[in-house]
Length: 288
Image 1 (spheres, one colour):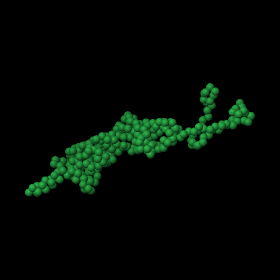
Image 2: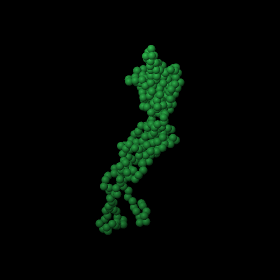
Image 3: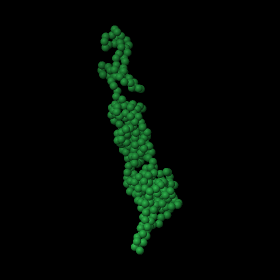
Image 4: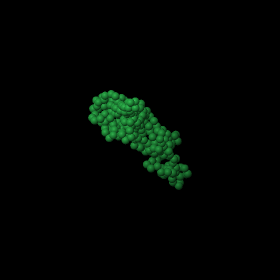
């Protein structure tokens, strides 16, 4: 008799608290949101044993919503909605309860319950509003040219969206993992100025920017996609050589008044697109 009661009790507990067994091997087929304003908001549905079903909202919270947004690649959770905000579903209620800590990459890593000892209908369907996929920033150089001499400062501008939740903006050089410049974002501006000071020739190459937002529960940082690269060239300008040709009658280092002469200026290496300037330094120090 005791053995019989033990079997019944074990079966009853397994029915009421199915626990992690709800996501057994091969049982979980993913999560989706439907009937929302965009592809990152709506009623939450999970696929168990090749059937889509809803989630009861009795224990639905921001931790679980955060995991759903992360699994869908939809940024951070802005709200965990209850009471069938996105309309009641149909068919099965797949999960009566789910408990997440908020850092899981998928609902499959949360404690899920297929059945619990309280009533739940489709008027209790859970939903979520996610921030959406973070938009790619756009990087530009605040200069009419992309060639700089060593020692100059290069002013980049990173255009970002959405600007109201951005914490920091970073400037990266291709091949370097750590950012060269990090700047706090101003929510009133559409972008952030990033200044690379005193550039050297080894710093030429491709640059890109990224931004971070903080949100979810528990709060955590999410990084945007990388902007398209911008290439800059940094050159070490060598001292040019110059010499001049005058008439054979003129003393060395002198030019006869009224006669013409030629000045040749050159550099040991080519700088495509560069130009030379001829300056006249008068005896009083002024330049022309």
